[in-house]
Image 1: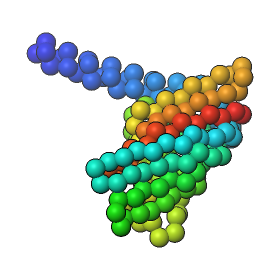
Image 2: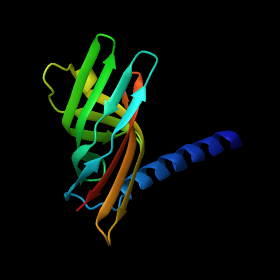
Image 3: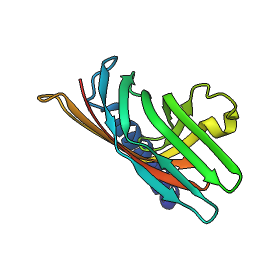
Length: 152
C-alpha cells in the first residue's frame, strides 16, 4: 500500500511540475516576434534532412500553442524527397515535446506535414526583448536542431 501511494504521489508531482514548467512561460502572449533561424543538417541510415537559415517569426498563444514560421526544411532518402516551409503550429503534449504542423505545402501529404519535436527550450529577457528558442525536429528517421533568435 505504501509503495502504491508513493507511486501515485510521484505521478501527480511529475504532472504538476510538467504543466507548471510549461504554463510558466515568461514570453508575452499575442506578441509577434521577428528573428532568424540557423541552418542545420541531420543524417540517418537512409538519407538526410536539412533546415536552411533565414527569417522567422514566433508567437506565443495562451501558453499551449506556439506559431513559428520556418525557412526551407528538406528531406531526402533516395527517390523520396519533399520540402516544407512557412507557418507552423506547435502543439505541446508536455513542456518539451509535441507536434509541429505545417500549413498546406502543395503535394506533400499530411502525414509528412505533421512532425514531432522534442527538447524544446525557450529563454526570454524582458529587459532586452530578446528570445531564444531551440528544439529537435524529427522528420521521419532524421532529426535537425532548430535554433532561432527573436526580438519583440
